[in-house]
Amino acid sequence: MTAARPATYDVIVIGAGAAGMMCAAQAGRRDRRVLLIEHYPIIGEKIRISGGGRCNFTNLHCDATNFLSQNPDFCRSALARYSPRDFIALVERYGIAWHEKKLGQLFCDDSALQIIAMLRAECESAAVDWRVPCAVEKIDRKSGAFIVSTSGAAVRATSLVVATGGLTVPKIGATPLGYRIAEQFGVGVVAPRPALVPLALEPATLERYGDLSGVSIDAEVSCNEGRFRENLLFTHRGLSGPAILQASSYWNGGDLLHIDLLPGLDASAWLASEKSASASVAGLLAQRLPHRFAQQWSVEYGSGQQATGPVRSLSERRLCEIGAALNDWSVLPSGTLGFNKAEVTLGGVDTRHLSSKTMAVESVPGLYFIGEVVDVTGHLGGHNFQWAWSSGFAAGQVA
View 1 (tube, rainbow, N blue to C red):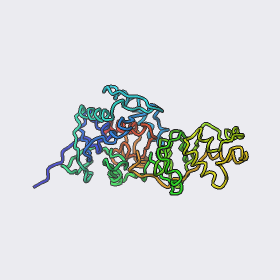
View 2 (view 1 turned 30 degrees about the vertical axis):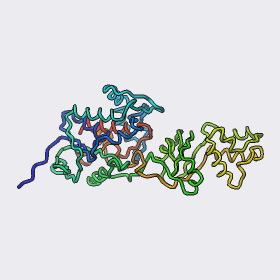
View 3 (view 1 turned 135 degrees about the vertical axis):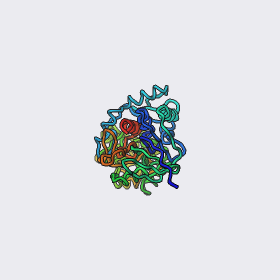
View 4 (view 1 turned 45 degrees about the vertical axis):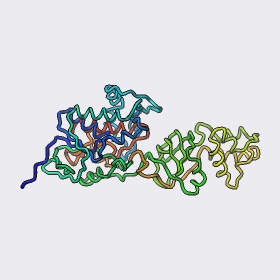
């Protein structure tokens, strides 16, 4: 008895997340017969949990400077062809109310579920077929077509789009499938690692600051080429908050974080202006920083050189040293908190193998990679979703 022939489609998209649904809808609108496969029982889970349940779906200021990649210019074409304004127009067409929170970050007024419903409606209006949940077991390429063996029946298409995401939040279905597909077809992969992730502190540092869990400071954090002024948050394991999450994408292990605790203020000049004060350094710092942190930092920095006594008892040189440390507090993280706590994956499918206009693998006709699985990683604040929309749109126009 001969096996049944696989059902035939024009396009198979693997992954029903942000990029996958965008791509499937666009391809379907071109009268392509599209199948969208998702192994997790629920579509768009990463959308649902994002932005505190309200989905930071794009950023008004999104451009190529907001992304990290070994090929930093790669994202320019897709972002220009499908911009934040284009996605906002789609959101407004569905009557989804939104607001700008800060720094160009746009959120739904109500719920991230509205974005998922919108994308599903876009796919359904484009006659996209679904297989959910459905695991991909094997992919073969024969006579110019891709044969995808699944936990259901095998399917066939001349175009295969991989939108499987990165390794972040494995509890909602993240797997390395996309990287394995790339390697199967001879496409390079930049080693993935966690990004936009909290950082752990070494035991000695954590012993001093670990009890400050929940304390937040407006700070400027820099690491290598990254410099960000936002909130820094102490946790029971180390450091988090937007400034740390941003800097983590630039942290390569063993790098120091440089933290300006009083951004915009020359701390040495300020302390010098308080030279006659009877208050301690800790007391002065408590005027500008959380009291508990001011105490702990002053004790650590004192370390045998009195920083907790009256300011007037300290030499100008000592005040200058303390001021310099306030504007450049050097902290050595012991590591990240891993993919379970990361928001995105840094690294992925090497863009040198892809067309920046179509996301197509230039050496394998009909094969595309989009979204987080690609070595394009955005800053915090809606940029990664915009990459999903833009790259999904780009592939959907041609797949």
